[in-house]
Image 1 (spheres, helix red, strand yellow):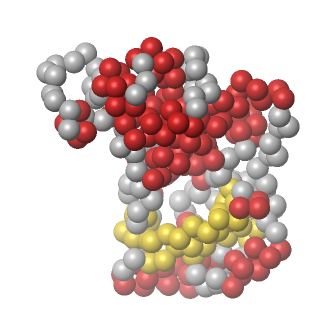
Image 2 (tube, helix red, strand yellow):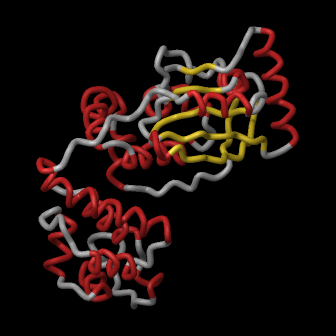
Length: 283
């Protein structure tokens, strides 16, 4: 059985071309990317040890080995941080019975965060946790997402919507990038809560589009969010995510990236006001 650490190292090795690291092209290979021999040599470890890490048979590499692998793969800062995080949780799998279980994902939004969200009106913003639960949102967020199916359920969840609602593939113009984001963020949530949610609810209905992304550890780009709105047409939104670290939540603010989007959002907001929209906290 593999580990998140091993999966990530193997995926990065397979996607790294030898010439990008200044290594000679050794001709056709049975598998793409960097050979184990080349990566092990660059990291200063044996091929056998690298194989054990990739296959999950060694779950506790030292900090020096993790850093050496990061250097050998020429990982950027975000990838290095993710590699270290995966090394931590992969090692924890072997000794989890000696550690207290992490607290489940917090679904209540503190009053101070709700007040902050209110101050952002009439802007477009929401509060979510790492599982994708939509916990609170401004009236403008509700107006812009109306008719897309995202907020139709009693307990809306962005991750479930992205992977199980066909409307999401139309609503998100760059669906693949959004799917990568939602899968990646699950690694940052409480592991016990994640395991229960994935096993009982999401994985059985989300299919291979979800499981393949979860295991590949694709670090998201998080660029401009492009939407195909059912009535307003194309929208482009910049995003700013503010961490509410004490609650493992995020306050995400959406800012129109161009004038046409700003005008469309304003029209949708006025339409929502006529329907009686207002700040809503799910919890």
